[in-house]
Amino acid sequence: MSERPTPAADVPVEAGPIESRDPFVGKEVKRAAVWLGMAGAIALVVLLIQPLLIIFAGLVFAALLDGGVRLLGRVLPIGRGWRLLIVVLLTVAFLFGTFYLTGVQVTEQVMQLRSTLETQANRFTTWLSAQGLMPGASDVNGIVKQALGSVGRITSWVGSAVGALTSMFMIMIIGLFVAMDPTAYRRGLEWMVPRDHRAEFSITIERMGNTLRRLLAGRLLGMAAEGVITWFALMIGGVPMAMILGILTGLLAFIPNIGAFISGALMIAVGFSAGTSVGFWAIGTYLVVQTFDGYVLLPIVAKKTVDLPPALTLGAQILMSALFGIMGLALADPFTAMTKSALERRSQRNEEKDEAAA
Image (tube, rainbow, N blue to C red):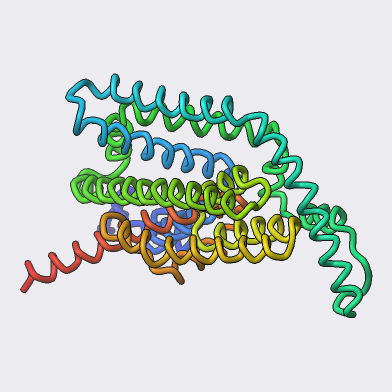
């Protein structure tokens, strides 16, 4: 009697080498999906770099407002909403009051500053041409247009006044909304992290926020000190447009290292337009202000704020400005400080794990 054939359903069937049921194929598909996802995320960041920078700038502005609210809370035991309203009203009153009281003078000085800088630059390039250091007389306006024309598409939106104002408005709105209830946005970020890592993520976010607030407090103090000292020093020396130069020096102080060079070049150019002695006074003012800021003010502020090495700060500014233009240059310092804080927390966490394992 012959044996009955085994039913096809009882015969084990192995997966083919190209079938998704094969464990090796499934593992390789997962790896490929991870790499494709990373590539897609990088491409998405490149395409959305402008709105991402605006959002990050809004978070920086929110940290600035939050710092003011926390500082005001030490003297006024009222609700957070009321303290935020006071900070916003004081900021708006200061800005409008400054522009209302000095608006006409500042406008006249801005126009005069532009004309003076063009004249001084033309004189300088003419002198270089006469010394044989340049192929020929160069038109400053043409040089400026060529420089602006060489900026990539990523930063071309900055050249538009409408785009700049719109971006500034969006930054302020984002910052205001986040400052109203930062806990809600922080909790939302924590929900995007796996549950096992939420506690560590919360600690890291808190430290990054504290670092950013301390950094901005130090920057504001330095900006105010540099602007006021420069204004009065230039006014005493008879340098034209002392007010606008002081305001520009204070604003450019937000960008350490590079901002100091730009403000120094402006005040020296304006100083020599009024005479040799006034020009040397402008040089002396620049040296005294920067020496005071670098060796007196910043070391004192650094004890209470963020300790960023100058070379690291300058390198980050160069990279961020090359990649993202003026917006990247302005945000290089906060980005570097927050990254440094996150890396320090990670190193501390690893040390804690090593001590617990030992």
